[in-house]
Length: 250
Image 1: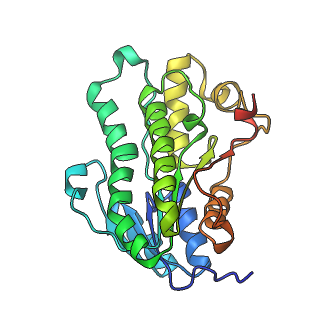
Image 2: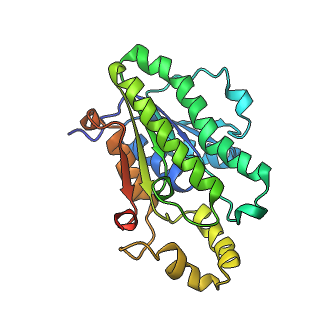
């Protein structure tokens, strides 16, 4: 198989300025795609776009009203952008819950809505939603994140059913804790709510349920995303691929 199987394809990667998104942008570009790096951080988006020979799209996905009438011409859409707050339900601010759902569920819906006409017209498309093991399992103190990811799983499956007749696939990738700035910030929050030291959080909280006792690397997620975008994955749709070191096997 050619390593340039996405030559001539245009890909949009949200949250592409760092972490998983950056790795995905690099992986798709290496396979020939022209990558649009979407991120709220203009400097980060610009740097990654320059590195992969793509373009930057500075966008605030929490401003969902601005996306209502968006038209998106892309062959590949990777919904990756995400935020996290760790808090008991009874003290979680309602606006924080709404913010997480706006960025991680409402915005992906609007982007899918914006891109499907182009994909349908071309008879080909790949949508990959970077979900989480928390799209399959729950954890305490993550009500907004877990519910948003569960919603994203449902959105992905409905998209798969509607897109199938038009050559469009839609799948979720479900990593456990990935070595990213988002996870590094969580260590402090997890230490606070679990009353542990930061040194204890990784072993006793983050990797407690994982059979493989290490963090997922961004390049590993990128590799799976790239395969789901390839011609070889044309019969893979409506699926959720756990990459959680065995967490969801329990």
